[in-house]
Structures are given as C-alpha cells and as structure tokens.
Image (tube, rainbow, N blue to C red; front, top):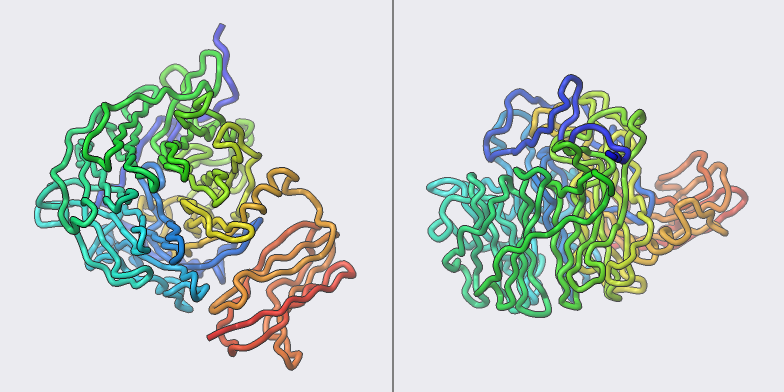
Amino acid sequence: MFRLLVILLPALLFAAGNLSPVTVLQQDGTAPAGPVLAPVPPVQGGATFGIDIGTIDTVGGTTYDWWANGPVLRMVKNAPGFGVHVLWMNSAATSGTTFDDRNMRYNYYDFASHAWNWIDPDYMQSGVNVFTHRAGYGDIDALATGEAIVGCHYTGTGGITPKVARDAAAGAGIFDYADGESVLGVCQWAPVSVGQDGTINIFPITAGYVMSYSHIAAGGWPTFAAPITPISPSPGFPTHDVTASKVSGKVALTWEISTDIPQDAYMQTSTDNGATWTSATQLNPPEAFGGDTVSSFHITSLFPFYDNNDRLNIVANVMPYVNDTGYIIPSQIWHYCPDNVPQWNRIHVAGCAPAHLQAAVGYNATYACRPSMGQDNNGNLFVAWEQFDSANVEPITSRLRADIFVAGSGDGGLTWMPAVKLTSAGTSSMRFPSIIDLAVDGDPDTIFVVYEVDQIAGFFVQSEGAATNNVVIVQKITSDDIVGLAENGPGTTPVRAELSATPNPFTGRTGLSYSLPRAGRAVLEVFDLTGRSVSRPVDGFKPAGRYSATLQAQGLAPGIYVARLTAGGYCVTTKLVLTN
C-alpha cells in the first residue's frame, strides 16, 4: 500500500503555472538584466523586522542578496582571545548584470574594545573590502594567532579561479593574497578551512562541476599545493564544503549530488592535514518520512563541522521524494555523527498544511534549509537555519519571507531541544544564516549568528524584484537563553519586569533587552544625567513576554545615561555608559 506523508509542491521553485523542479545557478557575471533600485527606504526607515531573543548589531549592508547557490558557508568565526570575524558578499550596485563592485566584505568585533572595527552611520559603508578587485562566494576562518583567512573566487587572467586572503593581524583589515590560478586553473566556489597546524585547506569546483582539493601548508604561504583531482562522483552543482579540525590533522570534504533522484551525498576524509585521503564514502540519508516516501538530501544540505572533541558532525536538511519528484514540505533538519548510535538524529520538522502555503519559497530552497553548526565552551552543539513562514508573503515578488531558527543539543547530538525562533520577519526576509563555530566565552557563553535582512523577499540578483539596501545583522544570543526558551517555551511569561543592555559600556549602539510580566503599554526611554529624554525606542502596547530594542548613539555625547522601562505598574532602570 502506498503511504504518503503530508507533502506539497515540487521542490526548488513553485510559481503560478510552473510546478516543475528548477535549480537556478547564479554564474559569475551572468545576472539577468533589467533590475533597478526599488523605491524602498533602508530597513531602519521602511521595511520592518524584529528579533524574538537576544540583541543585534548592524555590521554592514549589501544589494547583492544571493549569498549561496547551495549550502551556506562559514561566515562568522571566533578567534579566541582576539575577536570575532564576520564576512558577507557585498555590492552597492542597483542595476546592470555584472556587479563590478562585488567583493567579500569584512568586519571584526574586538574583544578588547567590545566594539566593531568598521561601523558607519550609513550601514552600506560599514566594513572593509577583503580583495582588491571583484570577488565573491567566499567564507572565513582564522589562524590560531587571530588573523582572518578568507577564501573566494575572482576573475584571473584565464578565467575564474580561487584566491585566499590573509590579514596582517587580528582585525587589521590589511590583507595579502595567495593566488591559485597557476596551480588550480579555472575553478570557482572555493571554500576554505584552517587546520590545527595552520594548514589552509581549499576545495574548489570547476564550471563543469569537477571538484579538486588543494592546501597551503603551514608556513608555506602563499604557495598552493598540487591539487588532488578529480574528486568524484561529480556533484552536478556547487553543493560542496570543507572543514578542518582544530584539535588534530583531520579534514573532511562533503558534497551532495543534485543530479541524482533522490539526491545522494558523500564525504571524504583525511587525518594528516590533507596529505592523503580516504575514498569517497556515501552518506545514507536518515529514514525521515517512512512508508514509500523516500528521504533525499537537498542542494542546501551538508554543513560539516569538527567539534572540540575532534568529532565530525554534519548537519543537513532532507526532503521527501515521491515518484521521482522532490517536495519542499515537510522539510527536516538532521544531525549526523559517525561516533553516535544512531548516527542520524532529527533536530526539527518544518511544514504546514498544504492549504496554508500561500506562496513560493523561491530558488534553491526547501521550507527549512541551509543549516550551519557551532558549539559553546561547554561542548553543547547549536544549529541555525532559515525557515519560511507560510503566511508571510512578499507582495512584490509573491515569495514567502523567512525567519531564523536555532536548536541546541547537550549530549553530542543524540537528542535536540525544541527549536527557538530568533527573528520576526515583518516585511523583510531573513536569509543565509551562519552560526559562530565557537561561542564567545562568558557566563553564559554568547552565540553570534550573521544573516541578511532582505527588504524584498526573492533575489534581486535573480531579477526577482528590485535592488534594496539590505542590512547585514549579527544577532547575539546566550546559550542559556536558547536552552531556557527551548525548555520553557517561547510563551513562558516572565515573573518580573527586567531591563539590561549589551554591550555596556558601548560605542555606536547597544541592545536593550526587557521583560514584561503582564500586557499593557510599555515605554522604554533613555535619559541623560540632567533628566532630559534623548531616545524612546519603545512606546506602545505589548503582550507579556521578552523583547529587544536597539539604542543608536548617533548624536549623543559620551557619558552616562539611564534607561528606564515603565510598564504595567512596574518601573526598572539600568545605567548605560557611552564611550568614544
């Protein structure tokens, strides 16, 4: 008997009159023509979004809203003892097809100053370019001495080829380069990962989807080693990633086969910093759906990660296949570890009743997809992903908007706490989340998640709507917050009014977190020491719950301020210190 779970809509693209699975690849320099700047103001003054937990820092902006063809790469990296490195794909272009100014853009949170190095009142100017000319589709890691390592592909003399940047010091923003063209030839989409001894591992793929591996040996900068190629079977799409252990010489390559039905996945490993490799090993998907519904990986699957116990972890989203057709719901997030029994364990199930799905998810996506993984200093694992809202539709493009979710595990991935929703999309769409590899040490530890706030759901780069100035956000959440919400539920009513600020002291901006034990009018106001009101971030009716707001310091003199929350008969205050 044929048994089918609740599923709907062939995967990857759903639009009126088109129910066929479609994979869209944004080739370099071949964006569709025709988009122009939309008459939409920046997020701060136009499109709306919010967060359900933690605080946010705006670290940059971009009009280039298509950050990954397949799985998300590592875009935020903790360099313990130094700071946090953040990367995104940047352009300010509002028309045309070549995005000549496209670059990998970089910002750095300095643990010593408790501030980001490059913040401008115009967020589109924040951060610094990593490369000296057009580049894209990169990721970030760091040496043990704190310097950022950034991979990308760029246009060389013979075509698109990998390039690696190394910062002069932690957070300096002064890069020198290793050019892979003479060794690797024409290839692109080249993620990097730094090994325990400082070896820089590079895993590029050609336009014909032939994968190869190279590395820059510790102390061998800027020389690329002779590539190991081809690595097979061919993925048929840029679905590949690389991770290196910070404990031993282990390295792992992962990729998904987009041309298979259902879609398969593989990994290949080394224990000697990439000198020798095992044969490719097929990853059998988890039995996620049961019956005659087949479990399949998806092109946005497979984010590999070595934890501090030197264990390989892989997080993936899987989708159902029926009669050789893949479907976007229900989409599931799963964790794999070869040391666990069982090796696959489910993190999350996402979907909705078919009748409630009001629009398409868009190109190269399932209902919940692009997971990434990190951990805290106590060994707890955390996974973040993007997930669409079935009822939140962008009217310009008829695309669903997405939010960011996170889940945690305290037992090495055997069991997972309920997912916690980090954002409230409003009239924006949160895309391409990347979670920090290691939480910032503290009591409790703080987890950083970087993502794009796309003002128009759907991709300008793919000619879905017009260009908008999209903010790049770093959301900071404590590991205790995630565990507490997962255990108690997001609807748990606070027992008292609370108000706190992070960071404090601060420069530029600070996040104000507050709790309301009962519904009513809430007023959050900031005063200087003369009693003059200088900002009122919140004034309106709020249900009982936990909230966040941001205080922008623009126009305020350095000094001491007082934030006051009045709500439901409660009044709480906290001191704020604004530094130069």
